[in-house]
Image 1: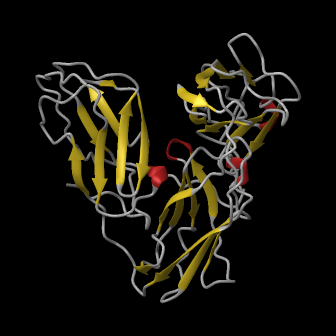
Image 2: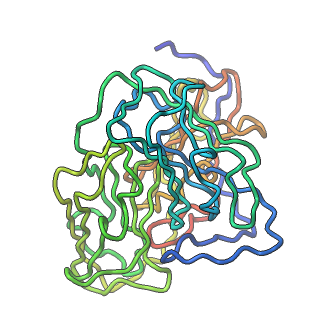
Length: 361
């Protein structure tokens, strides 16, 4: 790969702290009726398959969109959420659209016996007919594309990483996030309080809300803010074979891991311990992915394109954010410009698995 000299392609990690509110998500399927003053248009915050995803399996059955707020289920139907492969050719058969209020997730399910055409650009669309509970429509149609491959996916997904780690000792009792990363995109409708559970000790369920981070293929259990895990206890996490990928392939077997709590709480703010490229680096490749490494395990849902941004001057760079292990990566959608100054920012809202916000450094 040709190395392009960059005059000042500089990545500067800036921690910006000002007055802000952090809003909690979910909560046992309950929702608060909207205020009559709600005039804000809902947005689509993430999709599966991802925009511009390559080589999507032709036997993919699930297309998913997650919204910024609770939607009116009656406005999500095959006329407001549809798939065309290629553009202009609607998916055929008994296509179904459904909505899960917990997590604000809409899914388009394709017929079991129907495959997508191979080596084709597919276009998914959610129109402004989709509305939130206050009747506010999407400001503009949400349109994204992905490219199919030539093959079907018949491979069982696997769990590639977990937090806390298997056999981890001294896990803080105020831990709020239990997470598992998968080898591929999963069917979000199959990840719930039946297929992904926590027990402390074994046989004693811990209540929590199950959600899915589409960009990183991570499922997580969020424990209520007021709850703590029992101290000095072995906890068991279980993911059953009810969890499936987008093609309907189930985990090959039940996945379990354990960790042991301590008697202490974690009140220590996480820090960024390393960045790539380095602060004020020059001569950076224009294809560089921007990376930040944290001092401890983080809440994967808090690391996204809102809290991890890259800008050229005041213009935001379009890209995707993923998180695994202790590392967050911002991958630009296209090459960075040469001879250009860029600024990367890890902003307020990033939290560790105990809910501690990033240190102000």
